[in-house]
Length: 285
Image 1 (tube, rainbow, N blue to C red):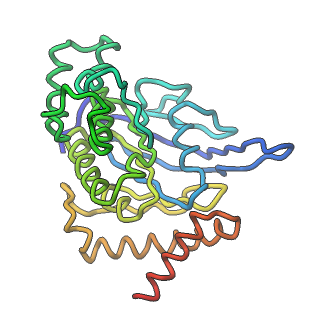
Image 2: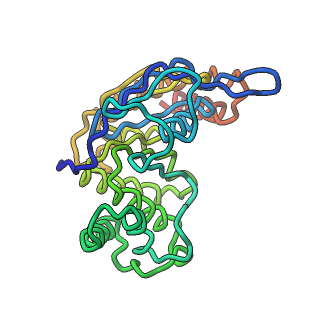
């Protein structure tokens, strides 16, 4: 995989803790959370509902500050929001008054660090990669939900951030569209090689995408397992039936089931749904 200039970005999260005020009490969300995101790799984070995944994303993006601990990118401390870190959220953030092409070129154009011809050439290539070349002059309202998500990914990638943060970006899409989005995202990642942290609640998606899979505990969240995923790239859907893939899934599910039980005991409905699905799987197996 060819690495772009934006693919630097080794991230080290060291003993991050975060609590929120709930009345007179403090509710701990993250507890001494440690992880490393290798430069140019795609790391996927998965854990029970409410374990602090989105809080961690917000801290990495600079939107929130931890109570304790530190974060560095290439050895430099992370402060507030910066253009070297970009977040793709669940909700679309395309400008409705701009065409697809205008949305994609907007970021690097206003930064004025690259020539316009270079930006437009890069944008055209990204549109081709995500299958939107014929929709470059369409407005967001004229695109399907999946197309909007593809445009969002292209708009983020063109900025060549040192760190891409993706907080369940495909949540809410139907199963077929979600599978297609995974393939489009992998095309972008495998072309650009930007350091990325992808948060998901779907185990199949997590293993299919990841170079490294990080498993989080129930709240207060911390990383309890790091699993290198050595499936070859480029990834193809047929890998989801391989013996190696099924071994990864079995190991991850066993850990997540234990943590989901803890969250379930704490009243998480999403965790209860996971436990029920896991037990049904065991019965069928």
